[in-house]
Structure formats: structure tokens, C-alpha cells
Length: 355
Image (cartoon, rainbow, N blue to C red; front, side, top):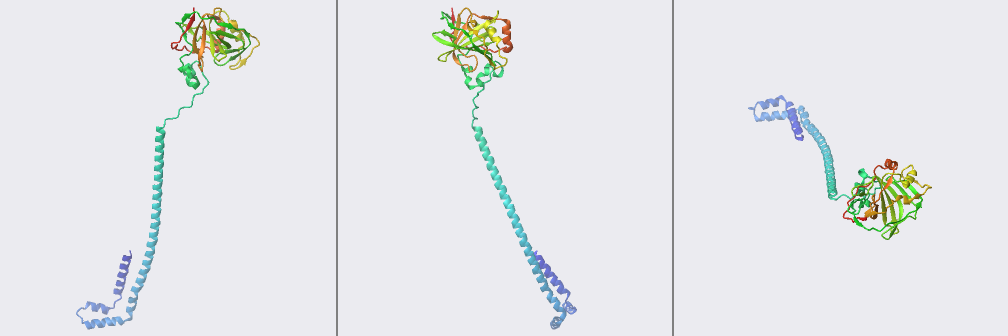
């Protein structure tokens, strides 16, 4: 641009100078055949004329104006350069910030990817051990799932001496008679949500195999849990005993329909009104009424037939059944139509039977 301005200024000076030349000079220029002396004289005369002086001053003004314009241009170019430099610096800073953010984002993404890979490669922690307490005789919380409800109930699925079993092919031998030392007793009764359980006072014992066990409680199942040669009964009473060493012995008395059962009627007469509510009647139980007249029995080693399915329990199943009236059985069936565990594998257990 500076060069264009200079060219424009020079052109202007030249045009102004040409326009102000006198006619004599023009004629001297046009008349080339004139003598050199005459041309020199004309030029001298023209130089002495006062009208030439303003023409000689205009190039200086133009040059001064051009210098001012150049100074302005220089200043404008400097300002533009500074603004361009500032803008370039801003763009570089923005670009650098974007690059830094992109690098940071990439590092974060790579870190997350590594973390995800580590998590994927790491096996999940084991679930917390089950510590449930609710169980039933059917459905999701039934016998097939007892061991899943609570880790302490593992024997319900892994045990090899589980109860009940189907009593068949027993070894017939002369089993010693069981000594029942039962008396009239006070009792406490509760509907525990699984059965009607009756806890009795102390002082009631059985002796078998030179081992004495004290009666703790008895309860009922419908239908009977134990079977004899594949056949069960409508109900069964389990009388649970414990030795001084903590060993358990269960006497099972199978119940069929027939005449009224005196001990069962006393229990039914004092049923609590609410589940888990315990009552302690003023009447007493004659525990000998729980036993059949004949004392022949089957015996085997089994377990509790409900959680936690503890093994090492001595079972004594009376061969003679007892009777309960249809009304007595119907009353229990209203409360518990089904509360029996299915029979379990014998796993080669020895079952002995009285001759």
C-alpha cells in the first residue's frame, strides 16, 4: 500500500507540474528545430517568472502528506499486528487448553478403562452368609431350601443321617425294653408357627441302652413324618428328650383315627388364642397317656426333622399306633393342614426292630 501511495503522489506531482508549465515552454518543446541557445534562453526566462514558485512548493507538501500517511499506515499496521498477535496468542492458548483437556479426558478414560478391566478381572466378593430364621413346610422356604436360608442349617441338605425315614427291612432283634418314668406334670403350651408344642415340667425320664434322657417337650405333625413300609398315619406325636450330656432322643407315637385321645384333649382345651403366645394352665398332664400299651419299637439314628436338622438324634418309633378322634384331628388340621418333612434317604443306616 505504501508503494501505491508513493506512486500516486508522484503521479500527482507530475501532473500538477505539467499543468502549470508556460506556453513558451510548451512551444519550445514542440519546436524541436529551434536553436539550443533560444531554448536555453526560454528556459531561463521561464525560470525567472514568479508563477513557477507555487509549482515548485507542491511536491514538498505532497511528500509531507505522504510521510504523514505512511506514519498513520505504520501505526495502523503496528496496531493490527499487535491485535493479530494478541488474537493468535488467544487462539494458541485456547488450542493448548483444548489439547490439555483432551489429554486429561483421555487419561481419565484410560484410567476408567483400566479400572473396569481390573473390576472385570476381579471375582465378585462372596455373598454374605445367609442368616434367615423363617422356614415353612412348603414353597420357597420349604424343606428343599432350608439349607439356603441359614448357613447353620447346612445339614438339612448335606447330612447323611436325616429324619424322617421310611422304616422297612429292619433288623429284627430282641431290643431291650424302654423304661418310661413319666408322671403327672405341669405344662406350658405355645403355637410356635410350625406346630403346637407343649413344654413339660421336670422329672420325666426314659432309660434306653443304659442312657437316661429327660422329657423336654412334645409336639405334633400332620401327616406322620415316619412311615412303616411306605405307610404313614394321619398324625404323629414326637416326645423330645435330652440326656445330661446334651444328647437327644425322640419317641414317635403314630396316631390314627378312632376314639378320643385324653392327653391330646387336655392340650386342645388350653390352646393359646394367638400364635407365639404361651399359656400355662393350672391343670396337669398325665404323660403316661401319651404312650401305647405295647412298647415294641423301631430304632435308628437320625436328626431333628426341622431346622437346623441336627444329627446324632436317637429315634424310637413305637410299633403300636394310638388313636385320636376325628374331631381332635380336624381341630389340628385347621391350624396346620400340613407340617411334615418328606422322608429322607436312609444312606445305608441300620434300622433295628423289636421281635
